[in-house]
Length: 354
Ligand code: NDP
Ligand code: ZN
Image (tube, rainbow, N blue to C red; front, side, top):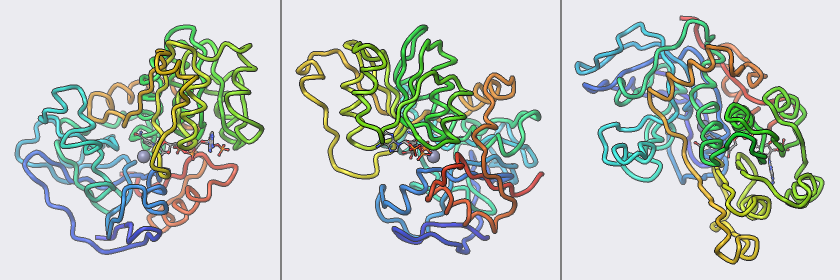
């Protein structure tokens, strides 16, 4: 089969690979539409998870099932499905402990385009099909459905990690597609004020639609100075980090009130250490919680978030700025996600209607 792969750090391209084999609990699927993630870019062009050779990229798609294993109960060939980016082993001890995304080791629930081939191929393999696939609601088109693999669950996880409560003032650092879904998630959880950090005009416009009330640019001075000014020196209840770099943690600690929470879903591609400012962290006693996490995957979350999108309470179409048709346009979609032109939020490629 034809597949788009990381060839080595800094290089990606088309390769030929065998169609994956289906184990007893697994499914083989064919993509209906795929989307490129900023994480694919970190992986290939920054080498953020190390060297990989001929690893098929991609972890955002919706698909049709072409084959299931003998022990799969709830899915059959022909079913149209949502596919989460994170596909844990649900019988693992980590899953029993509540951290399925780390089943088999830290971050090991993130299998596609990390520890096994991803979805940018004519066919791909899904482990634990009953635990990880979800039916694609008829009312969600295939382009919007791709946003349910990663953007919605990851952005919302930022709001979960920051533990947004009714009435909170929330700072969302980074309003790419992930941060935009953090804005939407914080809004749904009852934030009274959402301060968004980001400059791309398309993202700023979308953030307004998702509930951001104030904007600051990290290019116009420090995030902490601008945030403290906007909040009369008080700071914010929660910070969601969905962009920036290692230094963003320093700013977040300075922005959050004592007792406040910082939730990060950012994928740090660069330096070795994250610096926490000692004084603003209450010299170690400020009750400023920092929580960074890979989003939970799996079927239940996909079904619930799918319902939220199907009900119209979250309109993911604002994210889908660049839609292409056919595998041949995937190279262009990857290039756009790497270069991030000002009008881009997300690049999606439609492969097939059925
Ligand atoms: P984008 O690159 O589209 O957006 C990044 C945002 O951060 C933009 O708004 C950008 O602003 C802003 N930004 C850039 N530099 C700074 C800075 N120095 N300080 C503050 N803000 C800054 O990324 P995505 O939304 O696609 O993804 C966000 C992150 O989430 C990525 O690191 C991605 O890999 C990660 N991720 C994590 C997952 C998880 O499970 N934890 C899953 C999926 C993605 P501007 O508008 O100026 O460009
Ligand atoms: Zn991703």
